[in-house]
Image (cartoon, rainbow, N blue to C red; front, side, top):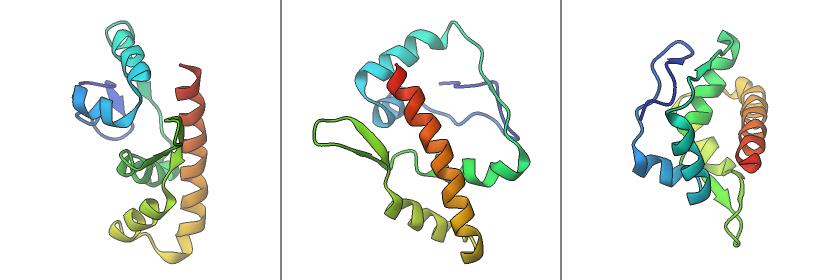
Length: 114
């Protein structure tokens, strides 16, 4: 699935229907699928925000859900593991966490509107 023609400095991540079903609830997945053919999406990312976006996208399967099934946010323990794997320097981690939280808030707001 092509989720955007331009993904900042690189190509859009390759996703298929199974990936989408893992990332969002069935209702949101259906809404995304219905919009895919009708709109063109481009994302502009400032260079200083690119590492945070990459980190956020690396945690795409690490969302926490409430017992009722509503989306709560990213699992920060998993985020810490991804920071380790990406060798984010200790001094950069507080700022990177803050950036990822801003992205997370925007994602949650967009997903909840659907």
